[in-house]
Length: 478
Image 1 (cartoon, helix red, strand yellow):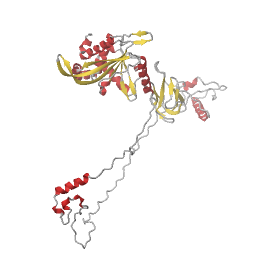
Image 2 (tube, helix red, strand yellow):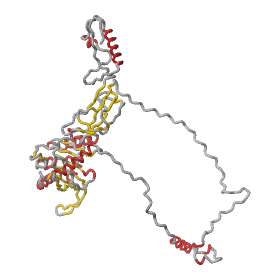
Image 3 (spheres, rainbow, N blue to C red):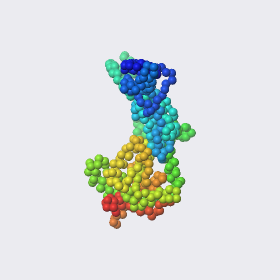
């Protein structure tokens, strides 16, 4: 509170404001404000803002303000999509750290991705309401931030001090080479060869008295040495000794994503009647097509023509041809879709994620390659949103990039099928009555046999085989 006489100038208003700020700083109990609810006031209070609050001398003017240096704000968990209910906290900062606006303070690891929680403004972390590894839900308080006026200053790297120059020590003076134990008044003696320590190494004819060693044939001496060496007994190895070195184990807690992946894969096996059907694709035509148009494709669209786009396009065509593979069981009903949203499995350091290519049935090779490149880059950098991984009617997993020959992928629930691509290897095949070498790839379809019959699975794989080996058939709508 501050009493203002009527008719005083703006100077009195500013003095009153400073007086109130002094009283505010001296209060024993600090009042906390949320920066989103109370506006900040920087510098002197504007005259127009106080004009309506000035009254007569027998009344009192009340001024409310927020000191940006003392305001604090609680930051809560952001809202989750419907498919996510909770996540685990991973702290990136600690209490007392200064953070800038939009700087990541912690991450919330869900079963699909890690959601970064950033500082809403420049400030200092005063308190964490959660610990590292805690499970939180949407809207739960995470930490308290004291708002400051400026961004934290980064410490400049210390300049390296020049090392003092040290002069190299002079080389030692050369001394005259003299034989060991040489006496200056005694003549030098020739070096004598050592005498043989044992006469066992000599042949029998040389062990007689008076037989000179120099008259013994060299071959005879070597033969005797070989016999002597062969008669030496080697002690058996002691296997009771302990193994030298460390043998340790390490237990690491599974992150939220890995736990959820394990649950979903086990759920898929427990719920679905999984069956896998195989086929093989001759990759020679599509590889020749890619080699011929790679440079022009890259120049026009800014992305390389890979092998994922032909398979995505062929899978979308096959799903429209066999809609039951694109369907799903919901209770006692079958849900059919007239659109194709293909999930593409991408391996990341934290686990497997499956971003979705929406409306793949309407995409061209260029659209697919641009979308896949963008999603893969965002997935590996941890920038995928949950919305980009929700949904999906079918999944494609490419194990061929790791050299896989053949495998049976597991369905990604609640989907009903998944296509597994494998490595390209040259193999002999029979073609027009002759054996030729062609680059071949095995493909596998794992599906829910409760919904999809074997006939439909075989026709689906044949449609993909046709679309990859002859891309013109897809363009022509065959």
